[in-house]
Every structure is written in C-alpha cells, then in structure tokens.
Image 1 (spheres, rainbow, N blue to C red):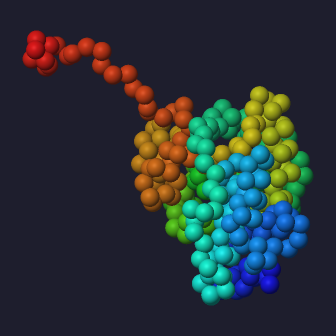
Image 2 (image 1 turned 60 degrees about the vertical axis):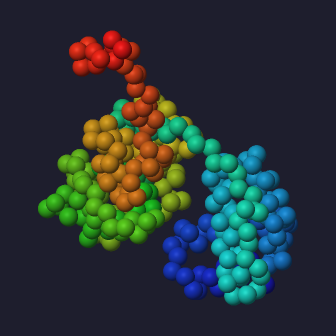
Image 3 (image 1 turned 135 degrees about the vertical axis):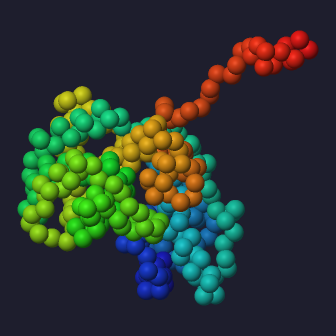
Length: 296
C-alpha cells in the first residue's frame, strides 16, 4: 500500500478541511517525486525522509519544509496507531531552523494605491466585474482582517447591516469571530450584490490569481511596490499594525480573532517598524525624587 492510499483512509476517518488535505497530499506527491516512484509504507524511514527534507533547503524556506514534513508524519502516526509500524521519534526527523524575519506590512498609502488601481482591472468571473470584486475584497479585508480562506467563505447571510459586521467561524482556528465594516466596505459590497448568490466572493484561490496579478501591475504604475511574500493576505498585517499603533497589542490580537494572547501578533502580524521596542533609558538621575542616590 502506498502512502496516498493510507491518506485516503485517514480522510475517511477525519473531518479535515480541503486545504489541509491538499497540503498533506502535496507532501506525499513531492516525496514520491524525490523517490522517483509512489512512496510506500516502507519509505517511512528516518534516512530517506531526512535526505528528502534536507534536499529542499536550497529552494524552500524553513516554514514550508516543516509543512511538507507534516504530511508524512500524519501518515506515520496513523500507521503507528493501527500497529502497522513503530511510532517515530520526532527528534530523529530533520527540522530546519525557523528563521525569524522582521514583519513588513503594507502602508495605508499602499492600500489606497491598490484601491485606485482596481479601476483599471478588466474581466469578470461569475458575472461580477473583477474590478468591483477586488475593491470590495480590499475594503472588507482591511476592516475585518479575515484570512483569504475566510474571505472566500463569507456568505451574504453572515453580513449584518444593522450592526455593520460579519460573523463567521474562522477556517484555521475554528473560533467564531466578528469583523466590523466601515461605510466604504458597505458601499463596495452593495456594488457586487447582484447576481443573487450564496457566497460574497465566489472565486477560488486559483481564479483570483489572474485579477490579483493584474491589480498589482496596475498599482505599480501608480507607485505601488510589490514584494515577494506579500499578497492579498497582507491586509491582515496592515489591520494588525494599525490597531497596534492606535490601541496596543491586546486590541490588535482581539481584532484579529486570536485568543492565545499577543505573542503570535507580535511575531507574524505587526510591522516591525511600528514595534515599541528599544526605548532610550534615562541618562541622568531625576533631581529631588532620587536625591538620595545622587548624593550617595
């Protein structure tokens, strides 16, 4: 039995999101390509897996390598649980050092350049102009800080115009979160209400790539600079950075829908240039308040 067949069995037993299943399948596909044949149960060995993971270091970042490994460890764990093989020892599997990089977001100027650039985006999907869809996505994405996967899942029934909010269960965490909507978002959403449908943004991850690339090209003509690793999901970082600057890290975490404190917000979302760190200490003792120390 090959590893893809084992994964099929796992999918029958677990209620995993499609994107998670896709990531696991991609891991097995890439490992099979490394082996030159479909990976089998016997290929779950430390030496072969470590050789594969180390071969990825020149082309992929450490986070991607860790994610590729997960697809194999899920299968390995399943096989161990049903007694087919021994449980693996995590310390014996190669784990690249995760490089902590400064967080860089877009600025509000970048955001407004993007909204302006939507005017020149052409084409349509499902009877909706790409220009209007992208404008609505930009405003709703900035206001709510929803992840792209959550944005694609927003239903019209989840929008409450009385409270000017959207309430949904976050795809990644499973937690229910409410995002607030500005007047700009409400106007942009009204422009794409027709034709009547369930999903607000009926466009897949692959389908949105072409209009997004067109948007970035048009924005570049206005002075916007697109850098690697910062696509439409960067709206979440901009939201967090603005909330942090105005209200602090705790509010930024709450506004993102995080329930585990501020650590993740600092590590992954707040632009490093806005962090309140490295303050200059006092250079002299403060007069009468600390006179005793000064004389002593």
